[in-house]
Image (cartoon, rainbow, N blue to C red; front, side):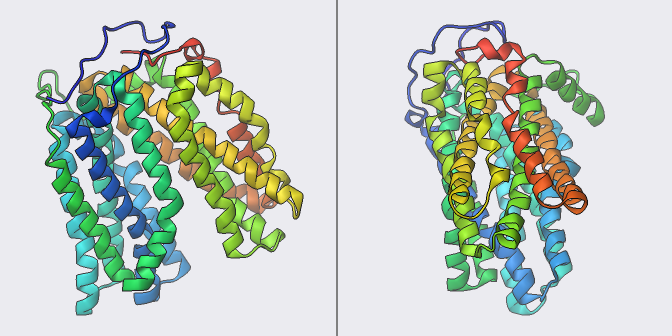
Length: 428
């Protein structure tokens, strides 16, 4: 069993001493397989996120609205089935759920190049593939977040999440360019096939994860809605999870508002080329990568809880530089500010997920993660809607100011909670 037992329980909001050095999670064979499975899955997803809409555009002559519908259906799965996915993940062992999700997504995406080659492909089929693939992603992601504490032990969560989120950030930086090159080389339908192969490889690698998952509790199991409500009550009533949820929702709201409207400002007002806009936004990906890389060191030096709000307070003024973007010097200052703001996002991604996994009992991990995914995805949807509304009423700078203000305040929920004094990750 590749699991290190967690330290003795303590109060989730009591200060604790500085964390002692822990072995690297990569010393665990099971974590190496889990990391590799995540790597090929995320890499394939980066290709698919570009290739699937390109299939609709190039092969099916889809309109802008139809491409938007395709993208919406993928995200909609988190809102439609997210809470119920958490219940079923808690009712089942996690690794088989991840393998089943990988195989299902591989079959769905594998159909696209086959149907295109045979002349059967329609937009309706693509929409079904997008929705069902999104459902598979819900189950895979919730199960993966719930399996990690069992694989590495709770005291190594910070290092494990730093490695996983660091790779995700690297994919965010390099993935679109690599995906574009692959699409150009083999055409969009066969690039979708590469995504399917990535999911197959992920399923094979997950077979190498050896962890003794406890049998899911059957006593007290009730109706699905009752179990969804139990998970929501646990999150809402927990002194660690509640401020973490509020912080994450505020961050997602701000990030979505900025990323939706910033290209409009850069292109329509400043006249930048698409290449320059991509370069500007790529700086954000670099910021996330660096934040994920340095999150563990910052937590060890400042304390996990203190890092979240002290770093946020220090970075807050940088967010307010974004709406001031103009040609010349202010353009480069805004690009640098965007990289600094997203550095904080990278740190948060590692520390906040580690907080969540550390304090949640095994039997509630699936529902906790699903509750977070639902709220965080909902914040993205609200951010998109608010951006459109404010943009129509007051112009594109208004949602840019609103998003920047939200990003400048993400530290407040942590500073106003008992988490502000924590040095080490809490235990449940």
